[in-house]
Image 1: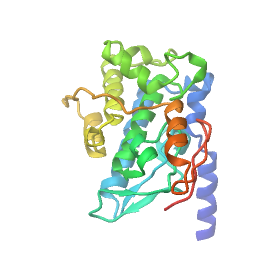
Image 2 (image 1 turned 90 degrees about the vertical axis):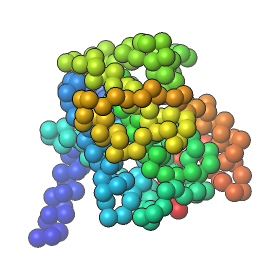
Image 3 (image 1 turned 135 degrees about the vertical axis):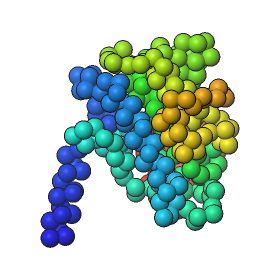
Amino acid sequence: MEKQYTEHRRTALLSEPALNRLLSDREKRVQLDWPKRYQIILGLARGLLYLHEESPVKIIHRDIKASNVLLDEKLNPKISDFGMARLFLEDATHVNTFRISGTYGYMAPEYAMNGYLSTKTDVFSFGMLVLEIVSGRKNIDRHLGDEKVDLLNYTWKLSEEGRSLEIVDPGLSGWDAGEVAMCVQLGLLCCQAVVSDRPDMYSVHLMLSSDSFTLPKPGKPAVHGRFFFEKTIRRSYVSKRNPVRRYNSDTQMGRSRH
């Protein structure tokens, strides 16, 4: 009976589409109107809150990205692929590791450069994912020209000019300007350069759940983009101490766990 249940769950998970497949397909993306996208963002925040603060053991996922978010028939999100996850002792706030695992575009720079791993590593990845959900595009897209290639820096530029709503997916329907603007601001807050300035997932969930919560102004985002990571790897990681190879922006870095 237990084996049958396990097989049933495995089959069910395999049949659930990943978020990236819907976002990358113009026709399928139409299914994701704004209420559904907001539902996905809120569900992901709730899931990460559980991993970071409510689970019996604190868990850092380390690879939060669109392809690791499965959607059920009601488009409720499920965080998947815990192959890189790191367990923390209850009183631990961070660790330093030489084993860097993750995906370009979603990795927090302090982790990619210095191996500094904390819950704020997942917060950064969540922020990038929020911006992708709002915009309907990848965080790095060479086809969009130099100004728009890096979603994070482009969004920051628009936000500073009071034009943050310009990143909204042109095909998005039923969107509320206030909610979308809040999500853009939240995404930028989660991707701030100063790690301690990023909100924890409890605060993120509160911001998304409360109509009366006033979000602070985001600070400058962390340096981002493929050029940054390639430069970082050439300068800092290709050594006996940190033997990490170069990868494309859409491929994962070493899956070794430490």
